[in-house]
Length: 392
Image (cartoon, rainbow, N blue to C red; front, side, top):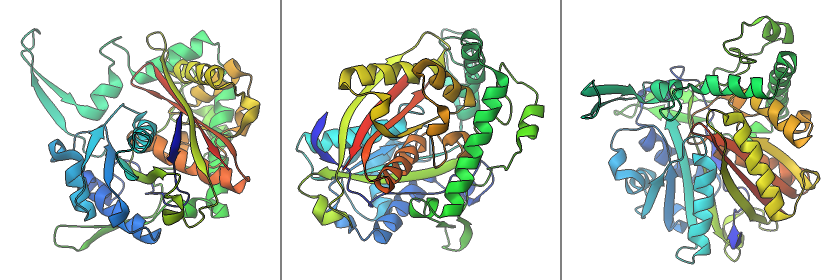
């Protein structure tokens, strides 16, 4: 897809994703925090920020001074470079990486920084004049109203999960089993030290430079027993409080470069990470968990690869139903996916979600000695996105 673009190994990092209102991230301008945190991560990875020529940022929730987008965030990073902002709901993290690869492939820049972030805490309320409605002024709480109401269908995201579960006759017990298994995967990755290689503790300061707090955990992750999951009431078909994700705050970043510059940036330049293929599809209305599967099917058909060719499979799964339906439609064991954790467990800050998924997946592929990496997820009601990378 992008034969000259590469992701240099070990130049990435992500914050932990604390649940909304549980950390000092609720108190800060997330764009400023993201820029400062990228500077911190580059320093830890021993990459001079002067190497960066361009910046692609991705977020979905309005933040103070968002109009100034990437140039402002670059200034917060301490490096005045050009760039732009993009968003595509929960596909933002993956799409931003792909756009970074495109900027390199086009030859305009040799080193592009990709920075994704969002803060669901205290999300803003917008007031819109609406001349065509009976209510001439409408107020929308950006996070909660958008997740609670798809204007194209009138349904909430949780309703879309329930509708799709009914279409595929999903079994509640299997959905609970998936959620429990995903929890165990996360805690095993945490206890093994794997997450310490990709997640970076970050300090939050107030305007006087005094400490507000330290972001050093995925606050909000709960250790639930299978019996506790079984006992939870259904909010919609196969959806309970334990089988869906939670809103959170965070950031994730990585670099994209050309194959000649990897040796200058990566601590292990012998590791080659290539872009292989990418696609998107749109499912029928309110069938959100189905859309990523359709995207994966199309992607495999286009690339000539199969699920058996994938060393690592990882997805954005806001509902455990997503994984059950993927397993059913692809005849693929859900126990082989998301080995180091997933958004179902560690939360859903939208913008950086798939970026963290990708970073964890690439790190896992390196541990396995390489192979193809499949990343997929959903976005904005009924969109599915999928991409394949190759680690050699």
